[in-house]
Length: 287
Image 1: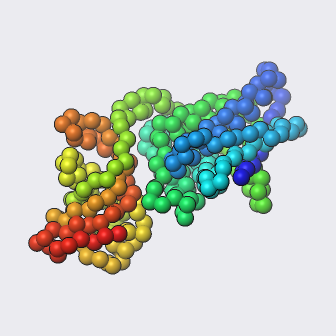
Image 2: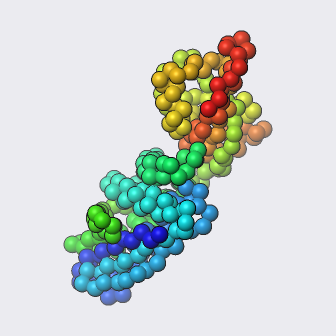
């Protein structure tokens, strides 16, 4: 399957060298393909998407590229395109800190997840924050080479021919390496957790305690089917001594003695079961 896109660069005569026009176009193609592969990796793709240059048109400089994936992975191409569109459309406010990057990443992850429903079972996409920020920083550098009165458009070559005009005034005003200097580690594993709040009203962000490491952290429950059932009271509330068995993803720093410290971006990806304390209700709820 091929997913085509036109990158249209409406250039002017304001460049010092004619070659710079082609360098700017090459920069946008590079950014688009790098972002696509950062997003596809979040969907579990071990191999990079193949982007092929199909045609170059003159007048306004238009580079026609297409992303390709094989067989069962073809859904990735569509999900990546939609998430890329969302990301470029969200580039309104200049970036200067990690929190702004996180906000963009979360929206890109949601778009990926929504587009991949039915294809990915039990895996909420987790985008590499540092790789994502590196692409944004590179995009900012390309934007700096666009002169006044010029514009850049991304045109999806499908039935809608949807056009997205890029904000070429947008800038990434931070150092990626410094931003992620204490990034630490990433883990995706099954954990045995207790819920550390007395009254759980069904909010999607809860506080947990890992029974193995004794680490306490806040995490977003992204297992939407389970969360909906919980909010609808389809099974009993979780007691203080009940244990949630769940697949967890998080970023953390090594606090020594096996403790997770400075935990960020924690997600409860899948709830396997709730093991009930024997003095509570006995047995377990399986999902």
